[in-house]
Image 1 (cartoon, helix red, strand yellow):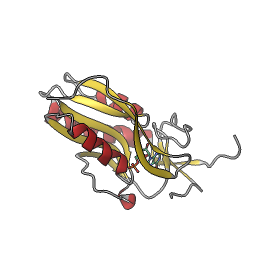
Image 2 (cartoon, helix red, strand yellow):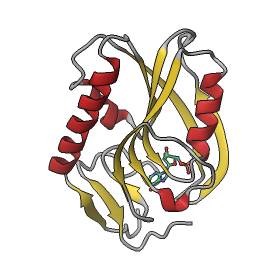
Image 3 (cartoon, protein in one colour):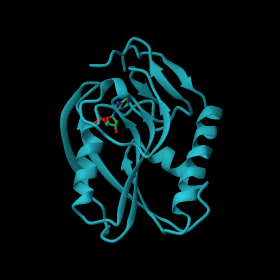
Image 4 (tube, helix red, strand yellow):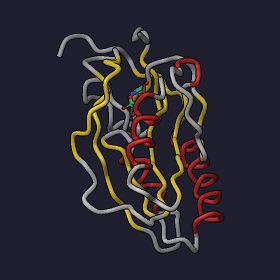
Length: 179
Ligand code: IMP
């Protein structure tokens, strides 16, 4: 495995829990009678989505889509590819996209554009974290958890080369520079 950069806690599990409760309250207010379809972007959003929907006490459906946008390490490739598409139609649905992090915005902007063409009634974005300092394309985040500094984050679903997803806190890696 070689030497690993050491994860430092940025937001601990109590802070994550409080933030997700706030997001759940905002989402419940807007969607409680709309039978929304929540689309989790794999893999990074799986933990966030799982915790969020347990606080949503109304009928909803869940779908997943898997994209690849990053090359190895923390270097973005700038290209977005659909690795695993939705398994059902979203036409006429109230769709809420669930993302782990909006960084350059390229992935989310690509996906919002892709989904819009499938004619949902509404399409909004909920992101656990936002790194606005790195934005290359504008993205509107309708429900935001945390604004984060320009550091590479891991934990709570976020990875570096598939590692660290299982950390219960949102951490940054000391010594791992952003590109
Ligand atoms: P964007 O296209 O640059 O906005 O990046 C979106 C995707 O890149 C996210 O869904 C993550 O999978 C990944 N990503 C961006 N920044 C980070 C980070 O700090 N840690 C882990 N993954 C990241």
